[in-house]
Structures are given as structure tokens and as C-alpha cells.
Length: 338
Length: 250
Image (tube, rainbow over all chains, first blue to last red; front, top):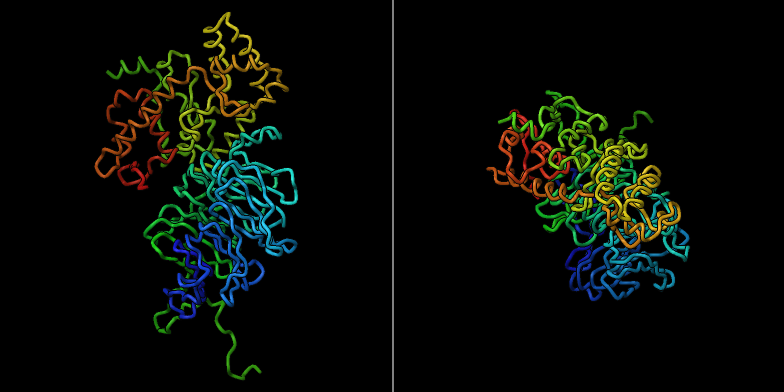
């Protein structure tokens, strides 16, 4: 797992629980520390692996740069400089036709950087204030969603020159081209964006303490009401959706806890308490079905689903290993069954 | 003493509030007339239609998504109008359409008989209200679809039927709602401060309702309590002695 800190340091962790204990610590494999010549000078806001393999990763920071790193040598392969601080960047997880990285900065224009050619001349205009979050659709190669401090969320097709496809409207008013300027997705800044894993719905959170679920094909507000989702963040809030559960969950940082809701019904399942200070970001690892969250108390916590264990019989006193039975060896070394 | 109160505010009391433990209202249409009865009509001398807030409906219906969707359906069927109350972008007032139409007709036309407003307002009520169920109206919709001139739109804003939202778009409004909003905001702050001043910042609901309402609270304690619970400004915790209202930590 890749993590970036507010001191500019980037650390890579190995998430495997090889100690077979129920409480374990993940070791850091390597890090880009303060002594590295190319380390970011200010806080690292967003880090992302190259979607197709772990040979490369990208990181963007308040020092107005987006850096592309080679994992094996831990050197920068490329640096993109911008005029304003970078709040967020994202590279499309499904695309094989383009290598564009969408970057949201303090300026109102969304910049698209091409990793193949090294240029960042493609700009998407339409927002009026800083762009706090960007996210590519996991379903279509060219669809991008951007969220801005001017309360608007826009869906773009980057091949189209004339402007955004849809500006999301929380009141689901009548659609017409001239109307778009008044549509707002939230009543405050829109801090975070997350597509569901199938790409059909989009979740947005805003500083009006609301989270909204949108149909990403027509921009309609599905009116699922999650209640008050406290959000005081001045920067982007990174939240995540589960992948592979029977009813998908959304994990949102809520003060110093993480609130878990079912995506399509809006019901709050639980609040995960463990951090001491405000939680800023969380990610979900679908292979292990684990949630990792980072907070201002300098800790990253791993939230592991607790499995139901069979009631132990009284006469057996085997030492139970805490390893998930799916990962245990299933072959025996005896030759009885040939 | 209580007879005198009944006389002044006829329909405030005598309505049983449904708490979460009681029979649960799953249909906001049945819950709304009850909430409408909590609205003190006498206070505004019948000039305002009874306004219920969306947060009050949430306090009656346990699942907010279902409440939102049913309100949206009622809005599309034309039974209710949802109106943006100015003090908080999230607070929406819900009014029955016939109530809105009768009150606006009565009070606006009475107040501005002979002035140029009357014609524009009549035209608005007759053509725009039944056709468009949204909260807001756009410039081209008003000029092209409904044939309003700019001067007529200005008349509508002066009469209080429309409020400016942005350049070229307007919210639907209730004329004369300023007084209601003033009483509402003051009353909400007063009830919240009653909970805040309590020891440990929590109060049993029964105790809160049993207290004498401060003078600032003109709309009734029950009305405000429904709103506070639905807007999640207080946490509702069920205990063995009843429901407890506690201010949230953050």
C-alpha cells in the first residue's frame, strides 16, 4: 500500500498478515524520506499506483507538482509543474487507450496530463473555483467527474471540446442547456467523489454535511438520504466504497471515526472508532476485504472484518491460528491418497 | 390557564406526537396533517398557509430515503409545494398546494388591488403553478414557455411570490413568510439553548415539553422539537425513562 504524509514523505507498506496474530503491524517496505533529493516539499495530497502494475506510481502535493515515480529505483521518472497547489489527481483505472492523469488544482481549470508525451496542455473549463476532487469512471475510458468548491459537480467526456456533459443538480429540476449555471450538487463545497465499483452511481460529499448518490448516466439525484455526514475538511476528503460485498458499503471519515452506510438504502451500519484525531482518508482493499484509514494522529489503521468463529469444544485445546482459512495450505504431506 | 391557551392557539395541543417507540408513520401524507395542526395559524392571523419543514417529516418517518422519495412523488403529483426558506439552504418548507393558492390569492390580491402586481400574480398562479412543480424557475422557462415579460417578473418578486436565486433564476416563495422565518430561527435557537444549558447538555424529552416555553418560542415547543430531531441537531437516545435529547459532540 502506498501512503503519502503531510511532511512530504511517501511510504510503501506490505499489508500481508504473515504473523498470524489477530493484532499485527504492517512493515514499511521502503520510503521516500526527507533525505531523498526529489521528495515533495509540502504535504502529499494524493498518491496512486499506476493502474496496470506496481512498477510506477504518481503523487501530487501542495508544492504544485505531480511526480511520476519508478517503484524499483525510487526515482522520479517525470515531474509536471503547475501554477497552483494541487488538491487531487486521478488516473483512469480501466483505460487502455489513454494515459491521461486528471489534476485538480486551486485554479478553476482541470488539467489533463499525458504520461506518454509529457505534456499537460489539455484543459477542461467550466468550474468557477478550486477543484477539490477528480475521479475517472471505472466503467468508461473517457468519462471524468470533477468536484469543486463552487458547489458544482460536473461530468465530462474528455474527447468533447465544447464543455461538460452534465452539471449535477440536487433538486432534479428540468434539464435544459441554459439552466446549467444555477445547478448545484451541494449547498457548500463539494469535497469528495467516489464512483461505485460498477461505475453506474457516483457518491459525493460536501461541506453542507450531506452525502448524495447520483445516477452517473443521466445525472439524476437518487434522493438516498444518509443523514448528517459531518464534513469540516477544507481540502478534499477521500472516502471509499466496498467492492465485492453483497450490498455495497460506503466508508466515510466522520470526525475521528469512520461511518459505514449501505450505499443504496442510506442506512447507517456502524461507526468505526479507533483514531484519536480527525480521519482524513480511507481506502478499501477488495482482495482481503480490509479497510485502511489515515488520520491526523499520524496513524494508519487496518480494519479487518471479524469472522464468526465456531464455538470451541471443551476437550480440544488446539492453538488456533488467526489466518483466514482461505489462505491456509490445503494439501497434506502424507502419501495415502496418492 | 390552559383554557386561555387553547383559545389563543386552537390546534396546537391535543395532538398526540408519535415518538419512535409508538406506532410508526410510514406515510408522510398521513403525518403531515398532524404536523400542520401543530402550526399556530392564529399567530399569523391566517395570512400564511401552514408550513411544515422537511426535517419535521424526517422525525416522524424512520427511513429518510423513503420520506424523501414519497415527498418527491407528492410534489410531482401536485399535492404539495416545496419552498426554499431563506435562512438555510437545506431547510425546505412543505405546503399543501390548495392552501398555498388560497392564501396567496387572498393576501396578495387583497394587499395590492389595483396595483400592477395583481395581474402578474394571477397569471402566475393560473399558468405556472400547476404546470411546473419545481422549487425554482429559470429565465427562459418564464419568458418563453409561460410568456412573462421582465417587468412582470419584477412585479412577482415585489409581490413576494418569487425570490432571487442567481442571475436569471428564482426560487418559489411564500409572501409574508419573513415573520414566520424570524420566529422560527429564534425559536429554534431558544429550544437548542434549553438543551445546551441543561446539566451534561442532555434533557429528557418529557421534561423539555413539560417546561414553560420561553417567550421567544412563538411556534410551540413540539413544533421545534420535531424539527431539531429531524435535522439531527440533537441526538435522540432511547432510555428506560423515555427519549433523551443530547447535543452531539462535534
